[in-house]
Length: 167
Image 1 (tube, rainbow, N blue to C red):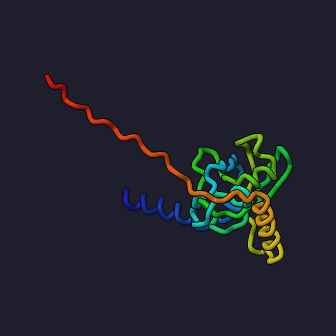
Image 2: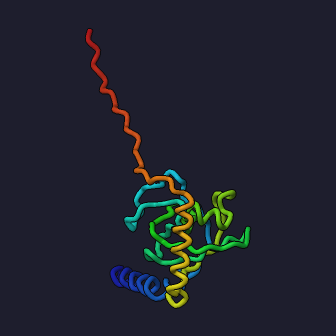
Image 3: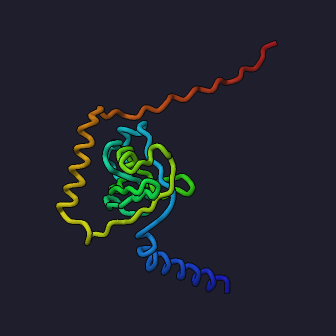
C-alpha cells in the first residue's frame, strides 16, 4: 500500500513539474537583488566572467542564455537581462541582476525590492533585437573599462596547537 502511494505521489509530482512548470515559470513575482561589484572578474555558472556593467542575471530555473524582462513597479521601469548564472540563494528572492540593470530600473537605492519577471519567448526574439541588446552591453562595458581581476580569497588563520604544560 505504501509503495503504491509513494509511486502515485511521485508520478503526480512528475506530471506537475513536466506539464505545468513551463506555464507556471513564464512569469514570477518576488524580490530582486543585485550583484555586488566585489564579484567583478569571478566566474559565473555558465563559465563566463562576471562584469557588473553587462545586463546579466542569475535565476534558479531559467535556462542559460535565456532573456528575461524585469519590471520594477515602484519606478514603473523595466529592462531585459540575459541569464548566465544560478541563484539567488536568499529566501524570497527570485532573481539577482547585475549592477547596470539595477541602475537602469532604479533598484540600487532600494537594495532588495519586489519585481515581476517574465521569460521572453523565442518567438519574441529577433536577430535585430538580440543585436541591439548585445550592443547595449558593449557600450555599457566600454564606459567602465576597469580591468578584470581575479577574486582573492582571504587566507585562513592557522590554528595553534595547544602545548602540554611542562612541570
